[in-house]
Length: 223
Length: 223
Image (cartoon, rainbow over all chains, first blue to last red; front, side):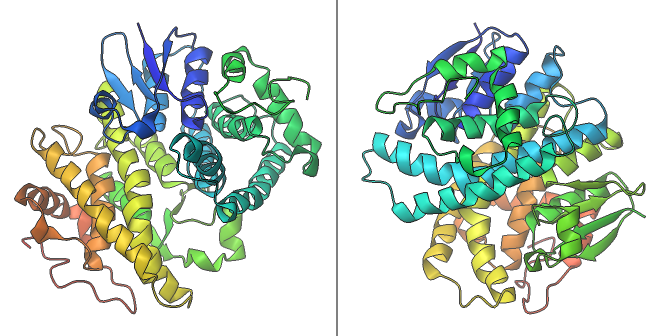
């Protein structure tokens, strides 16, 4: 059986879950509290990060970008990267934006402070770091709105890994009530509503994490 | 003419320069002081990061991972990602390790504090951040040594983008005299000597940056 070691509020785990679902690949989920650095988990991924994918043949894959590229190469159904090298470069550019820039400027501040500190019993959130994440998110949400002015989806006319990547980050923050929807253009909300309505997104939205109640509108499709 | 907007001490710029050279694609370099956020440069890459590649047809590519994937797809000569999906996943995993983990735990601390603060006239380096980078590098160099115990190159038996990525980061730190070679296994040095001896590496090693003299052994192949 294909197995994904994940954590529900990891945007990188969410991204791979959605890609697997888009490609109609069955898998079972194993919850991994990766910050505990479990010995068997470190042996699977010395970076001690989720997600880790174990394929039915036993082979292990880690680094969420590498996993998504692997799934795209190994399973042709529902291509998520586009067709021409130029299209694919744009999908990868936007995905990279959210995997790196958005993650280090927004997600990491908010999720580390609010969620992982709680689980690691490492004290209360650092309000300066939280504030930095909350301030930085606006610029990124404006970038999405800017892209949506001329595009149907983030990287062009087709739904792609770029949408999955961005929505994975946004959905984690939305769970925590940290997406300032009312301060942004309606186009942002419309894009997210379309993406979160995909059947591949459903199981992700149904997940909850002990100790953290999702924001009221979180799983509502017409929010 | 193909143009690469770069900065000599950006590991991501180095990586793309080496990939272009491995693929024997001619290009001209344009120095971009990306921290100045030049308006024309922001229009080319709203992330305001180097490198940016402009292809002879005028099309623009940014995000170094996206650029390398694009070059691999568009130019078949000298494949740098491996042949099977499983091989390619390993090349991407190790490349991702250095692009993200190594960058945020080592390179960024040292290069931001030593180099970019100087150019931005943002005061002296923060010794706590420098110390963090200097402490963290050991674990990563040990990981390279660990991989080299069973492999000829970082991701397997073939030279790949994983070696280029890791060596790009290490070469920037080596320029600044920040690689503690003597405290690490000979296998680490042997791997780096092989990689830096490739003709594709030469122009990168010949570059200097005003205000920063490279460490004495920096461009010496038998160091």
